[in-house]
Length: 133
Image 1 (tube, rainbow, N blue to C red):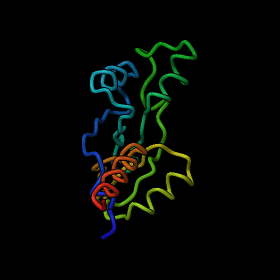
Image 2 (image 1 turned 120 degrees about the vertical axis):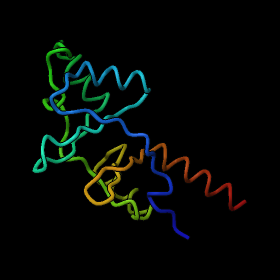
Image 3 (image 1 turned 135 degrees about the vertical axis):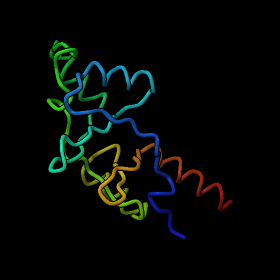
């Protein structure tokens, strides 16, 4: 049986509104020891985005901008790269390699329901191999 994305995805997602300040994102990331936050769509015509620790460090801190003044939407990436939760793990890995990304969000219909990181792939591989021994 082939592993599907839903089998290894992390469903502990943090979200933030696009008009929130970057400082609020920093607090969430540090408090929950996470590396990314899903940026909610502004309205039904908008799409999900993502803000990462990397975005904050390079786009705000390195430029000496005030995180209390910069809005999340100003530095977030849109649209997020996402795949259906029924996608097979092999396809996910190819997608991550093609786009050189460390995480892919998982959708069910229009909703983001999880995320899979390179670490999740590594852990799933280790567990699968251990079961075969």
